[in-house]
Length: 144
Image (cartoon, one colour):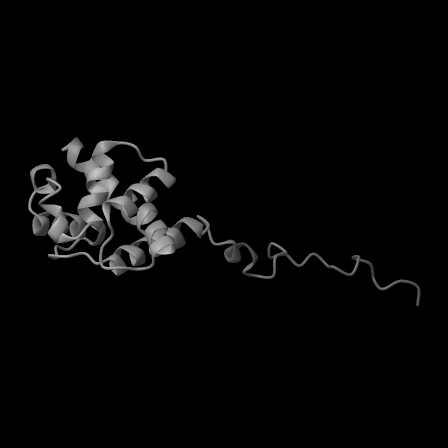
């Protein structure tokens, strides 16, 4: 159970951090080469082999998936793509596109930038905390 949680976290991290770097440097493509993925991993300081396998499984072409031995590590391509889809979008699909991964990253980035509370609520009634305590100084108008 803990292993599945860690793997899902790594899937989300690849989508959020690695995919945008690849798209920025190499353009948005259907898939990326091992060398391109290795560059993005290095840029993000990710040297863990398990993390790299997840990135390869998510971003490399199906034709390269089996020769790299990824099916032995991650399962069949369609099954792993379904796992990725479930981890990111709570629904299973046979293939998660780079475009979908970039959308996920964009959504996650926008959530990160929003404040935890809505500061507009503080000033909802004009910001004077509601009391009208005679803003004119409280006198009777002075010497008439």
